Image (cartoon, rainbow, N blue to C red; front, side):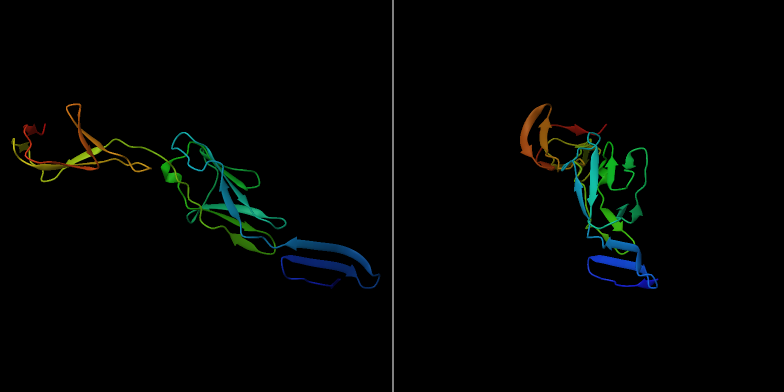
Length: 188
């Protein structure tokens, strides 16, 4: 057998023939793989509600696919399913921890490539708020001042509104400064 030609660009070709009979025996062609892209079926998934399918696309011949979440290879679990050809990754009941970054690695016998990082913007919350007090004291006397801070994990960022005994204090934001309070506040 004699190797007749090799073209290196996007297309690599091999032609084999018998030099004594001049009959072609085998032709082999393959494309190098392109840089893959990742697309999601849901642009802004909601935690626990949505199933997200990520699809990896690349050109080339005989392309194989592998998925990574950060530096860890993704495999099938109870919530995560890879298609038979590994081209799609499906996450059932998406969680905030499923944000990525995801990478799609593609390869064939000629070349390999990896996608740009893909992050899911999972919407969630707000979680139960936590309340903290600056200068914590067991008792606060009428006329004293204190600063209350509220926080709750959320994406998008939680909005805050303050109430006292069911009445709006017409104050928005994570912090409320109670200056010269007129009621006794007792920590129980």
